[in-house]
Length: 65
Image (cartoon, rainbow, N blue to C red; front, side):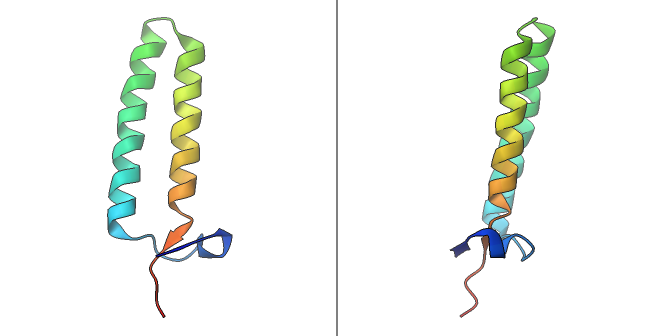
C-alpha cells in the first residue's frame, strides 16, 4: 500500500474506502446530533475532521509493483 499526494487520483483500496466511509457516516450522525443539541462548534469540528479524514483516505493506493 502506498501513501502520498501522487496517489490521490489512483484507486483507493476497498478496506480503506469502507473504513473512511463508515467514519464519515458516523461523523455525520454525531454532527447532526450535536447541532440539534446546540453544540454548534463541536458539530463543525466533527464535520471538518470527517472531511479531512476522507481526504486522507484518498491518498492511499494499492502497491502495484
